Amino acid sequence: MRSWWAVKVMLQALEHRRRRRLHTHGRMMAGAPTVPWRLAPRSSRCIVIATVAALFALTATGCKKPPAGSSASPPIPTVMVATVVQKDVPIYEEAVGSTVGFVNANILPKVSGYLLKQNYKDGSRVPAGQLLFEIDDRPYQAALNQALGNLAQAQAELKQNQQDLARYTKLYQQAVIPAQKFDNTTQATQASAAQVKADEAAVQSAKLNLQWCRVYSPIEGVAGIAQAQVGDLVGTSTLLTTVSQVDPIKVSFPISEKLYLRFAGQLNALGDANAKPSPQIKLILDNGSVYSYPGRLYAVNRQVDIQTGTIMMQALFPNPENVLRPGMYAKVRAQTDVQHNALLVPQTAVSSIQGQSEVAVVGADNKVTLRPVTPGMKTDSLWVVDTGLRPGERVVIDGAQKVQEGMEVKPVLATEQTAPISGTSAAGPNPVSQE
Image (cartoon, rainbow, N blue to C red; front, side):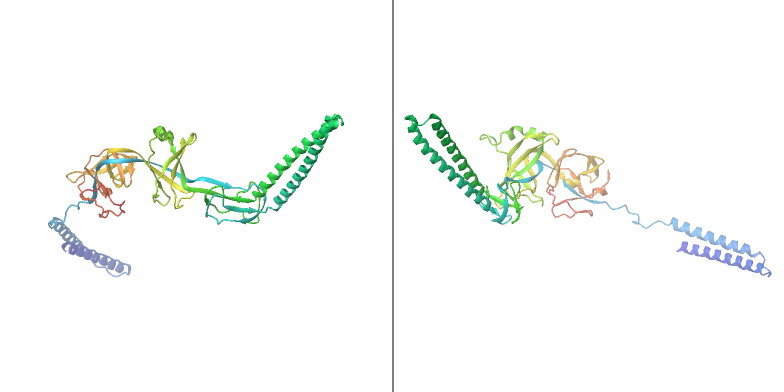
């Protein structure tokens, strides 16, 4: 209040002086007698008094001691911590591939003609031997009838030549006919026999063409959507549809040459009676769900791709419900080893700065130490730390952006029900929390 009063007095003095000067200046411009300048010292005295009063008030205010408790230290930040856990961790290898039908049969016609009928529903399951398509068979029926006629004619000629040869043979033995006539009859009989065989082959070919006008499925599986429509003129290079055997179904995926060499002995023994069974393989689908049935390794390709340095492998999965279809995204995961006595922390505890990983460790005195670490593999929501931590230490998993080296904090042990302290969303339940 004193400082405000002093400022108010000083402003009033200044305003009084400004009005006096404006009044004097106006009288001089109008030629009126001016007020003697003896009044100026009085204005100066007012300013001096106001200034001294203001300084006195400010000094009194500045010297006053603040009330007790008004300059308290900032509050200690609260952070969420988790305890470093030591346990055995399975090591998994993952690869990305795609599903492939166990058998994929491309259905192409063996004869040309107009497509008359489709005898299955697109995308339905068909048994082996089911009729799929019918092609106009009238030209092939006519060709078969012609082949049968040629065969009958050839057989009649052969029979006549055989009869002539039998009669001429007796006459030739009795020296009744010359040898040339006998030889000509013999050759004509052999030629007729050859013609009969040729016509018989033509009949068989005509019968096959007639049968091929009806297209059947060679395997049991799922028939795809037809690529040709009724009324189309199809040929031997026309793809009608594809039938895939999907139970079981294969998953093709590449692995690195380094990983192959690590398990080459076990992989090359696939299929041997005395071979060690391959590890179970889990299949992770595009929506993140894990397929219900585990699979096994099925085959290893014969060579390494020189451009990518990978080798193609295949795993076999049961598919009784036909959930899996060829061409689907598939990520396979298999356990290859176990890391004993591994140290685990939540992934949110590890921060990376310019390629260096570090964690904020809370000591027994609740003070923070920023410690560099060497992270290993990830497993679920946890991270294996190879070096830099000891079992039982507390690490900050939420609120690390608020801490600095040597800062005192208020740790809160994370549990599954603990909500995140900072504004960021939690990474999920913390399986490493301990009471």
